[in-house]
Amino acid sequence: VADFDALRSLLTPLIGEVPGGPGGCRVLHLGCGNSELPEQLYDEVGVLHSTSVDFADTVIKTMAERNRLARPELAWVVGDCTDLSVALPLGSAFDIVVEKGLLDALSCIPHVAERRASLDATMSEVCRLLRLGGAFVMVSVEPQRHEQIVDMLGARS
Image (cartoon, rainbow, N blue to C red; front, side):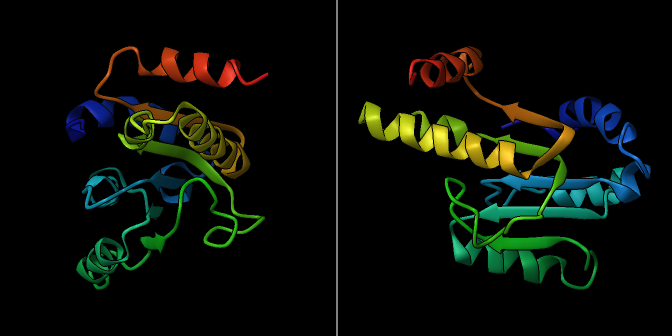
């Protein structure tokens, strides 16, 4: 969805604000797929504590094995981003939550009620897992996606 150079310029200042800097920063990557973002943050920025979540267990197994020796601190978790209560239980807290295309995918669910429920549940999980003062980074292929999601979630009341 986005190249690392663009993301680095966005994420580096956020990471720098975290107590302990890159080495103390905890990043959650939702809907990670086979993205190299956690590897790049580890190698090029020094973010050691990154948890990547995806519903595809084969992708998670592949990424975990690929990083097992070179980047042992990285965590790879199978989970449904609309309900991470089992995969990431109460007490899990992250300084930065990143999604790159997950909300785009959820926005394509054809039934409006199901789409709204999935977006609402995912954003509820983001709020639950983001530490107070943390940052949520949304990367979308659709320039108006942020406004669409805010409008949709705002219409639920």
